[in-house]
Length: 605
Image (cartoon, rainbow, N blue to C red; front, side, top):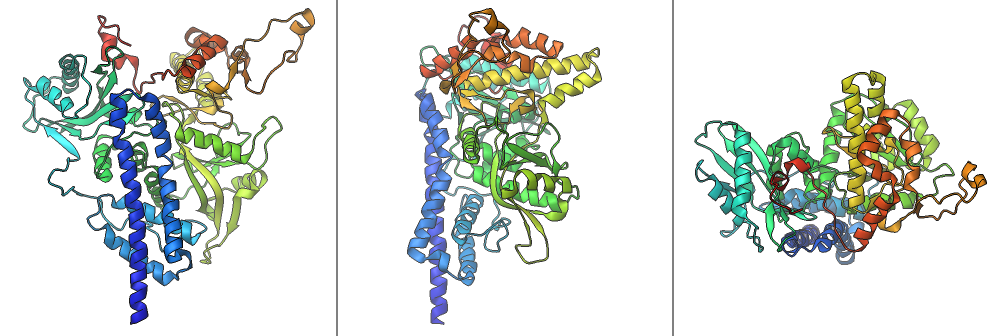
C-alpha cells in the first residue's frame, strides 16, 4: 500500500505543477490583454502592435517552462504510463470549478506530448475530447464582472441608454460628442428594426470587455426584439483632434461581424475571465463561424488548433471522399492538397525548388511565422501549423501520394505506427488554411462566361478592384507581397481578396522602390535583358503591368482604380510614412459605413 500511496502523491504533484503552469500562463495572457485598454487610451499604437505580436509567444514559453519544471522536479519523462494515467485523473479533478477548463486541457496536452515525445496525435493520456463542460460557468466572486451586461431601453430612452452603455466601459478619455454618436447609432438601429413594434423583451446585451485591435476598440453585442436578434459592433476610434474619441460606425448582422472577426485579421485583445462564455455569446451572433476560429480571433490560437483538429477528425469519420491535389496552378515552393468536402487546404513545403526560388525550408517557415505575428489587415490568411499529422491511407488519392513522394519525400511517412493494422499517411509538417477561390480562377470563370455578359464584366471588375484594395491594405500594414500574381490571391465567401502565398513577402520598409532608369542609348532601349543594376531588395513597380494586365478589361479596371500601384512614388511614400512612425488606418468595414463620411460638416479623418 505504501508504494501505491507514493505513486498517487507523485501523480497529484505532477498534475498540480502542470495546473500551476497553466494558471500562470492565463494570468499573464489576461494581464497583457487588459493592458490594451491603457494603450488605446494613450494612443500607444506601436505598443499595441508589439503586445499583439509578443502575446502570441506566451503559450509556447509557458509550455516550455512547465515541461522543464516537471522534468527537473519529478523526472516526468521517466515515469511509467500508470503514473500518467493517474496524473490525468488528478488533473481532471483540478478542473472542477475552474474558469478556463478547456484551455487548461489543451495546456495539459501540449505539456504531456512535449514530455512524452509522442510521435503524433494518438495518445491515451491526453484530452482527445473535453472531460469538463464549459456550459454555464460563472464567476462566483461577488464583485465579479458578468460576461455581458443587459440594458432595457424604451424608444424614448434609447439614446440615453446607449450613452450609459458606452460610459460603463470606463474609457479614460473623453468623447468628442458622445450624444451625437449615439444618435447615429440609434438611427442605425431603427433602420435595422425597420419600424417593428418593440416587444416586451426589447434589450441590448453587450459583452463586458472591449475588443482591442490596432487603433480601434470595439463594443460587441446584440439587439434583441421579440424572436429577432441583431448582432452589432460599434468601433471606437481616436478622432485625431484634441485627443478625443468617437464612435466611427455601427456594424450590423452576422456578415459584417464575420468580416470583423475574419481569419485574415489580427487577433483581438480582450480581458476575459471565462473565455468559453465569450465564445458562446459570439457564436450566437455568428452561428456560421466555427468555434475554433472564434477562439483564434480572441488570441487563444492553441485552443483553436485543438478544436480544429477535433472537428477535422469528426469530419473524417463522417465523410468518404479522398484527399487530392488542390485545383489551380501548382506552386513552386508549396505542395497544396485538399479534401473537397472540407473547407480548408493543406500546404506542405517542398524539398526541391526551381533555381529562381532562392530560399530554404527554414526561411519559408520564418515567413509564415512573420504573418502569424504581424497585423494581417484583413488581407492575409491565418494558418494553423501542425507536425506529425496522421491521415487514413485509404483516403489519399494515388496521384497525391506520388506528388508528395516526388516533391516532398522528407515530409512523408506511410506506416502502421500504432500497430493496429491501419496504414496511415503521416505528414511531418503542414500548414492548414481556409479554402478560397484562387483569384486567377475567379477571373477565368468570368472570361469563360463571356465579357459581353454584364455579370461576367461585373465579376472581373469586383475581382480587380478588390485585388488592388488588398495590396493597398497590405502596404498600410508594412507588407510587400513579393509575388503579386493573381494565383497567389483568393476570394473569400464575402467577396474579399486575401493573399496566401508568403514565401516572398518582405516588409515595405526593407524594400527599395525604384523607377526603371531611362535608357542611355538605343542599344539599352532595345535590349530584351535588364541592362541596369538591380539590388537584392530593389523593386520596380512599373514592371508589374506586363505580368498582371494582359487582358484589356483587367487593364482598364486596374488603371482606373489602382494605377498608382505601378508607380514607385506610391510605394516609397508609404515606406517613408511608416519609417516616420505613422501607423496607417486599415478599417474592417467599408468607408460608406463610417458616420463621419456621411457628416459633411466634419473634417476628421
